[in-house]
Image (cartoon, rainbow, N blue to C red; front, side, top):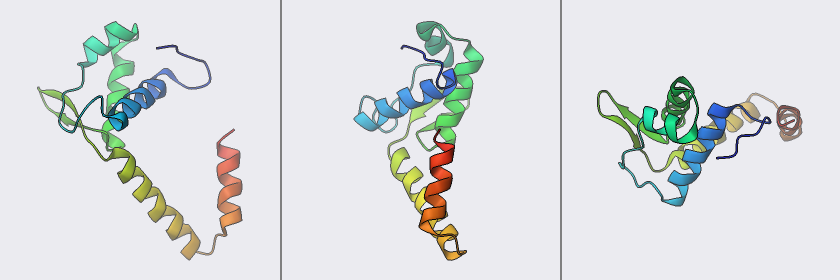
Length: 110
């Protein structure tokens, strides 16, 4: 993995695993590499990897089973898109315009 300064390392690890899961390299229920194994292979701190895996769980791309590890969960991207759609719909119902939402997204994306 080529780390760049544009994004925190833990997010780069998250995006890498999300991509692998979306592309089918890990099927639903497949074990992900251990935190320690991932840290060694990527030459990063285990705490960074642990944070990344927690984000994968929060984003719906993995589940954590105590004393067993982390496992891939298919549909993470679909779940995230559904949540995003619900949030945007809520903003529109509260009177925000599409243009206002897009303006904020453009500012956040910089």
